[in-house]
Amino acid sequence: MINPVPNAPRLTVRDLRAVAVEVPMTYALGTSRGAITKAPLLLIDLATEEGIAGRSYLFCYLRAAAPAIAKILEEVLRLTKGDAVAPVDLWAKLAQRFALIGVQGIVRMAMAGFDVACWDALAIAADMPLARLVGSRPKPIPAYNSCGLGLMAPDAVADEAEKLAQGFRAVKLRLGYPTLKQDLAALHAVRRRLPDVTIMVDYNQALTVAEALERGHALDQEDIYWLEEPIRHDDYVGAASLARALKTPIQIGENFSEPAAMAAALAAGAADYVMPDLERIGGVTGWLTAAALAHAHGIEMSSHLFPEVSAHLLAATPTAHWLEWVDWAETVLEAPLQSVDGCALAGDRPPATGLPGTRRRSRAIACDGGYWHFVYFSVVIGRTALISANGVWRILQGTFCSRPKRRATRTVRCRRMMSLTSPATRSNARLASTT
Ligand SMILES: [Mg+2]
Picture 1 (cartoon, helix red, strand yellow):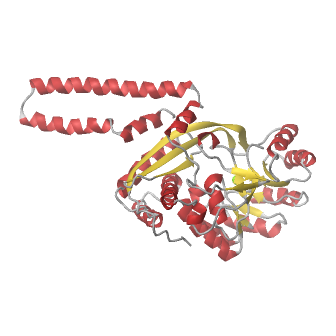
Picture 2 (cartoon, helix red, strand yellow):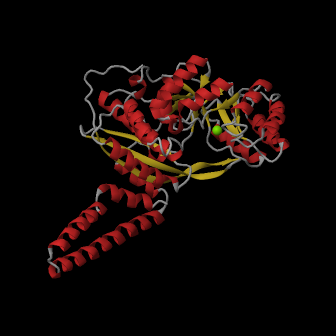
Picture 3 (cartoon, helix red, strand yellow):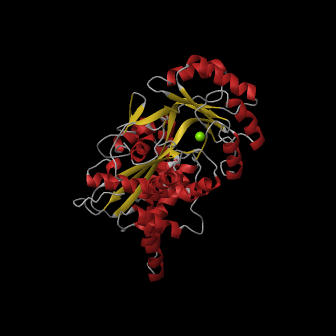
């Protein structure tokens, strides 16, 4: 599937940096599982020996997850530094080395972030958009606006839907109110306001199988495009029973952990459509396997979040369906994804991620207000003061204690001090400031 690029330089992993930022969302995401008003993102920079940088970002869901993933990325760097940037091989190596802790959760997210940055670097080295590198070309992908439209009063959700439908032909509504009556009230309010717009609904795993059957039968009368994650995401038997019983197509997949989970779901008949998530399916490498699986099963495949990279990958997905459009990362992007007449259109130039250099990232941190700048500089100044005091103490020790054993101890301690001032640790200080 991958095009040979004879003139592209071979790349070698040199360094990996991560910076956490928290970006206020234009529209709060109020789901049945809780509300999110700020997007905690982890911005990842891969440096290569050849001078080409690859970038990616992760959506961390929780602020506390960002520094934890950054720590795992330090381990990723330790294991891959000096290796060729060959994402399939690197994924296999890391999966083997992380087998005991398990390639899941934030370990898998770190690996996926690294994988996307590797592919981005390869696309830049080849001077082509990611869509071309994986065997296709940038092309319009139907997109639905998935911003906002959380659980709120019917009039409020209809007002918001009207704004979000501008420039799109489809929107996604979160359901999972305490009662079916409330679900229908929200849906009818949006439908009255937007009679010609396609509507998907997402329960975010809120229901039991019995509840999903009851509400699903009611929604079967409402011309809903798909019914997303009505029950616990890994209950494939339950999802299969819903897919058989309901007219409305069942959509799942944002929680598939690597393509193996998707294969299990498809084998169980758990979905009519699938929508893998870039950081859970295994980055670009995992996506390509998932796309082949969907193709083999003849099942439509959409994306979950990460619209910038997903637009490239859906272009190369034989059963490409819909792109989930969110604007959460736009503040930190140099080149946000463009939408034309309800379709997302990936850029024809790398980088695939649209991620920027340092200048724009600084602005991203600033968008969280001055408080985090204060914390960041406090951490840096405090640490500098600590290092200085420690240094003075070592000099005094060196002056008054000259026995060889003491000198050996000092050497070890000095190395540890040096590591405190390394770029990686400065990055950690910055990470800590966002938590
Ligand atoms: Mg969802």
